[in-house]
Length: 98
Image 1 (cartoon, rainbow, N blue to C red):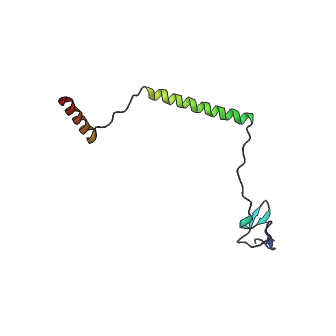
Image 2: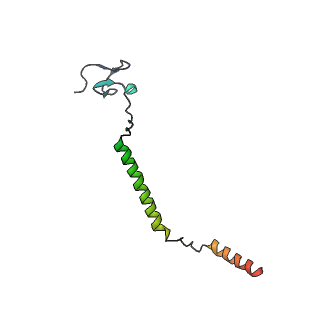
Image 3: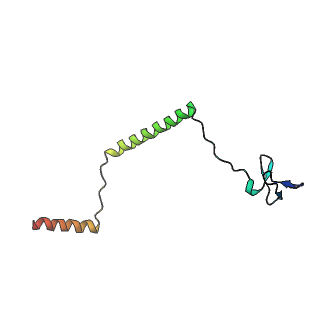
């Protein structure tokens, strides 16, 4: 089983065994010269441009809808923390003195 005849790296001609053999496109490579796969750029076809524009429009519609729904809610009430209570008392004392 495995590689019966001796294989050599396509780039550096290094002798390969089962531990350092890597096949790519039915050709033998060592770890150092194994071809790196990279992403390809998708062309801006008319259909892709239309889909991108539609996606942006959907995003704007959702943003506006969420904004309209939250517009009437007003602000949330800040909880009465000890610091807020202290500030309120200080403000009342200042008002009494003045």
